[in-house]
Length: 235
Picture 1 (tube, rainbow, N blue to C red):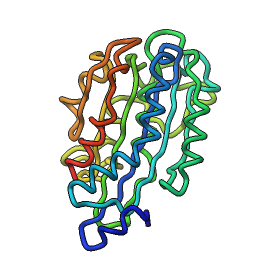
Picture 2: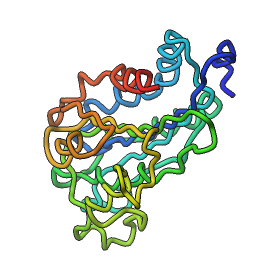
Picture 3: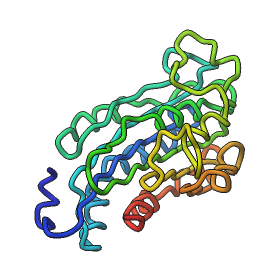
Picture 4: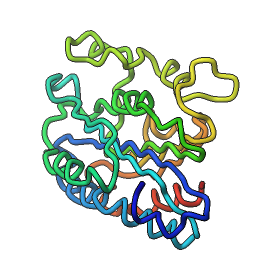
């Protein structure tokens, strides 16, 4: 148990899982540093907001999926961690983020949907009483459609669905038989351009917020406070 939660033993406590999907292509170079810096302060900021609300987090885990473009270089198109428990594994989290370098990308669309699919399929916490499962996407580009020629590459993840419809099924909706995410726990926060597929997700995917950005510089005004408030206000 996180020691910071100890003063709140008598109140409701929560298990929070966060998956950060981070675009690591060359165009992100001007803003990647600020994204990583904000991610590193995430734990302290979320706990402070929760304390103000008289709530506590009994378990906080963070996973990172950095992505580029399978069409440019399949060998470094995806870099990822498993879930890391904070603050116990903070140094491992910091080390991974520090190693992410903005490079490559090829054409403008990137492999963001592959990263999102891997995030959806994460081994989410299921045993604690109160849970929140949050995916956060940071990108300045549209995404290649699933099921294209890239899916035949040797290094392409077998777990990624071959169509947008199948990914939507895995995200889940009322009556979905293929959902892998817990309906009441899930949240998706998009810092992404006002382009396909991101601009359609807030309308079509439930529990989703979209903060539009502009290619190359839209994330410079990115505020982690948006994510913190989204999580804290939903608990």
